[in-house]
Image (tube, rainbow, N blue to C red; front, side, top):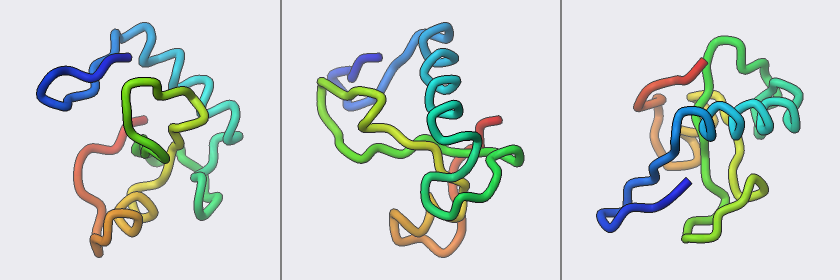
Length: 81
C-alpha cells in the first residue's frame, strides 16, 4: 500500500485482497460501528492518515456508518463486496 504524490492510496490487487481478508476476519464480517453484517457491501475507512498506515489504522464500515463519519446523510462512493 502506498500513497502517491497526489494523495491517492494505491495497492496491488493481491495485497488489497489480503488486507480486506484480514480486516473481515478481525471484525468477524460486521461493520466496525453498527455491527451489522457486511454481506451487502462495505467501505474502507481510515482511523489515521499518513505514510505508515497499518491494519490497525483501517476499518470496514457499512455505507451508512461511513457516510455518518464524514457528515453525509447518504452513502457515497462504491461499496466493495
